[in-house]
Length: 178
Image (cartoon, rainbow, N blue to C red; front, side, top):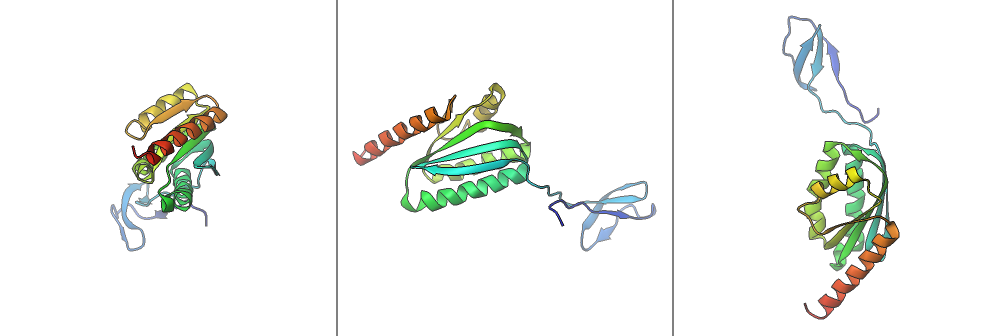
């Protein structure tokens, strides 16, 4: 069976609300067909790849994302963070290559927003977004308004260079006791 779960059962008109121990309470009756009150799960739409470079995670995302894809991405991202940075309390940055991203559903956006606080507690110093369209820039600014500093840069290499310099400067300040 795939990830989609939709339950529809045939019933008579004289049963406006039906209890079913496996599926819960029916929510609607249309022309003799009862639509069960069930949760829909869809296959993930979109793709991601996460690479580590020094103390940066470069995330390449593509396609139109739904909530399921956002969940997969955030789980992979959390695993990478916990593996590379959390045990060492190491400061790091996330770089997003947005050139093949086609936007996302509100559910995907909400999952990312919920993730931001945890990511910040794991010593994320900076989030850099590269290759963004005008619409993407507006959406990103709204989504990340309350988080750590956000940088929008035109080129991925410029983003890597910017992060390397900022992280080096932060390391020097910390070593000097600031």
